[in-house]
Image (tube, rainbow, N blue to C red; front, side):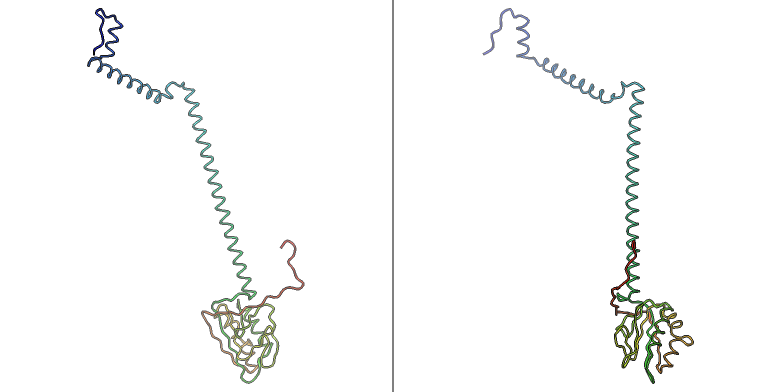
Length: 248
């Protein structure tokens, strides 16, 4: 049922009626006004964002740029510092690895010289066979010494005794005692080093080991080998009196 309309409506009554029963034209105008308001607000927001620095004075802009330059410089300095730290760490790691490699090489060399590890390499095999006499201690000692002088890095006798700096050779019934081990003819002396040098400078030279063994009544054959295994190892003794000097 429609609302009662006064016969003589006031301005308030007419406004109330327009709000309660808007015409099509009024609705269109309201929508257009709403769109226009939204566009105006959006434009103001964009203008505020785009013009962040538009209202600043020249000195203010210079201060902003100076601040940005300082920040950039500090960032670049920090990057350079970190790069130097990285380089130092890499250098330290490389130096440490080089020192470890050098120490390992020295340890390997000392182990070979001490005769405590098996070794392999080129060398010669000297076979001494007693024919009409017995090999003397002096001939064996001189042969070992000549091989060392010629550059032998490792020596063993009969595949069972490793010859080192303090190796002792003694006479024994039926053969020789080398570091307390009995070895018998044929004596097989293996030496690792340059084969040609060991053969020429260690065995076959005037008044050398070949001649000494011949005087003992023994024959000698020398084989130059490109690969020779020395598997016997020495048992290192414990010093009874010597000790490292302080600080070593």
